[in-house]
Length: 404
Image (cartoon, rainbow, N blue to C red; front, top):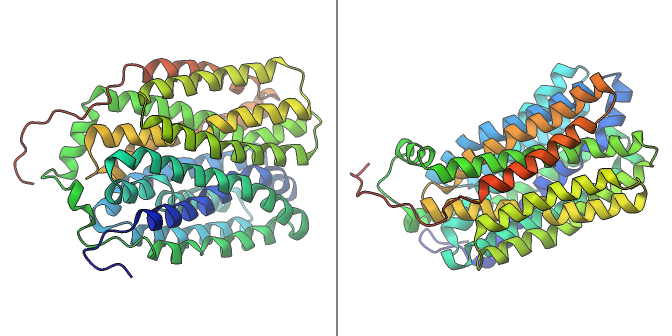
């Protein structure tokens, strides 16, 4: 057990943080596989399912701000334990919900709150406080790559659980699995003086006001909005899009798994490059490449091969924005309020996720097609590339603050 004053080892931070992100992001990445089984069995529309998942993204973003505040002030342990409990309750609630309202409360509100306490904002706060600045971008890339491995690992597992156990029992099995986050969280219990290296005489309100008055912070939020829109739409609706086009469910499962596999390489590469190159230029290249990949996917004839190529390309770009965006926030503002400021940036991501998931279901029910949402994803990608280029990555110049 770590003593009250002894910093956590880099190996412990990376291994335990990576495993938590692997479980949390891995379970989440497979939710699209439940769309058709649940809606067909319950007699719900796709919009009802999509709305619950959209609420989940919004809940994740809103609660994430407060989870970040609590983690910065009191340490990440309690936040992660609460997140694990909420995750288990939310997954069990999904299995037992018989109305769209109850499904929205469990799959939406509860699991969204769970993800706020068990994913990047909180884990990156620990990384920022425990790992030296020169290795921070690389370490964030490793944690993001772990989440990608979770996607690669868990999607086929979830597909098999649905096929063998039925969708309800499969959700209960995942609920039990989510509780493994708790012992991992205790391994990340930070020393009492963990935040000393990032401590400044600045209140939460001062930190928030400073960030929102700084143009680069707002530009990062705008780009992250697009990231959320694209990823949530593709992750939730692509399985149904492929089945509508006559492809088998296995193609969708393999495609999501490929996204997770190539995401491992993409996020690690982004984190490593971010330690040497301008992060804003890397972000612009990622968003522009996503727009090009989606456009090509819609132009070429659809087949399992083109789906797998698209999934591999998008996977490489999938979460590669995460270590770069969080790294810029840490560079500009320091690490004292990193989890909270990361939570605000991620809130913008989740507003985009809400629109991507909900619009996908809404426009499909109205138009019978996902085409309009695909076109929006392309246009937004170009926009995100442009807004990231003017971002200033250097540390903000501050007047000497009065003690908080």
